[in-house]
Image (cartoon, rainbow over all chains, first blue to last red; front, top):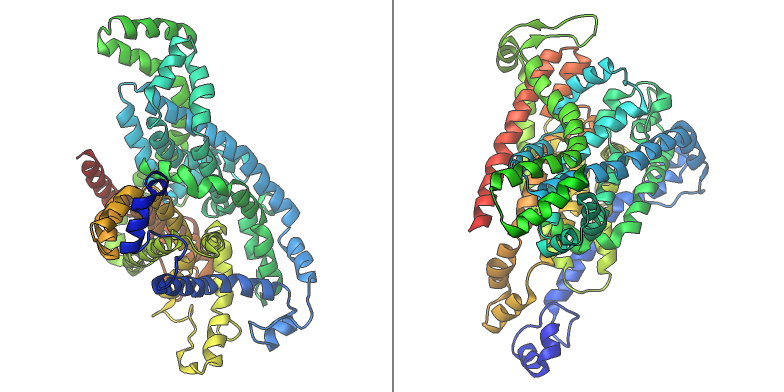
Length: 301
Length: 315
């Protein structure tokens, strides 16, 4: 693209003699492109099928599910499944719990991780490599390893079966990966910016808050999506640490749809769709940060 | 407090650059307030429970507060290795899961990213369709796929019957021979999008000039991919491989939601077996021993790979 701007003739020549660089098919013979497109569309259809099935099932009555083929449209659109889903899954309550946890945990966790990443990447104290290594190891270990002892810890802190008792370990388990990613991002910021601010007499906190953090915005946005999604969806710790139904988060409510009489598939599928609305909203809101430079920078870490 | 430290540190660094050591230690003091919240949370809720899991593996304990742990030495490990066939099955399944995850969804994600990196009609929609499964909770994905695999009413068997392949129909989650792979298929569906997005982000860092130059020199598509794109994707590949290994070793929700480890423990994995030993069988010692094996396996897989990839970057 930039070559085309500076040397249009050369680019034209290149286009004639060689296959064009990836772009809209020019003229004839882009059979490869067309074949590729068809293959992708077919795979997409395959990937979308479970969603379609879920949506169709969510609007069918039990009788309809038992009688007609899975891919047919519902005989009558039974939207009552959705209200039943809200009721069986106790969605107002579980949703409020999940939302409260996410709204506290995600920004707070990101702030804590950003502060630590700032210290490690920018203040370059003596042991910063060791600290980073210890944190990196933590981000690589499956959380289930510590679940048993975590249960005892929360028991002795008297925080078992409470929202607070979930927020604290959630914070702790989100931090290592975020520090690791932010470290890679912050390290790439040129020193001059920070030095000039320092010469102007800015305190370390001001440099963190007003120079470094704004520059890390794309990475923070990408991490915000990832963290919101994984917090909203977390199951293993929630099922270990929460007991009473009034404290349940959304993922725990899935089990309410299966009883010894079987699974009520209509309401279950409705519930799954409803439960994903918040993460879809967050994803759409921050989408533009996602594929762009944010993760590219993050990936280099 | 930090402000005074700053105003002193500033001029010193510019004027004389005296003893590096002094500067570095004062920097450590400066860094502490930023580090403490993260390190405290991390130490107390991540590191300590993990060390405690290793410690508990040498004890016998039901997990109840009324009872105190009894030291039993290596007994739990002896039992695990000699009297617990489920452990070996779980270990085997976890290893299978890691290997398959590195092969199938990773390659698929790379292919999708390469395809969807070209400009084409509907590109953004297609990217979203592949990505969206990964924002769904695994436990809901498990419920969804149980429905898809339902022996009589599920989509898979109904489609097979409709196209005349009745003989291919299975009880996908009820047959110990194939249940693990049925669960794995659901994980492919869910996991591909995330790796694809990482590869897509990586592809944006491949320099256009290099690709154009290679093409001008007469390189074919494969040569461009092999010699330009792939080397440039190396950092991305490192991240994808590490995340894939980690996510494979902690697979839990999908198995719990789809089979609960059954039938006949055929889909048992280490993360779930550790949990089951601790909380269902009330043996925190055995659970800790399984967790320790999982810990060693994770570190043994990830650390050498990370060290190798960092070495490569220094060159």
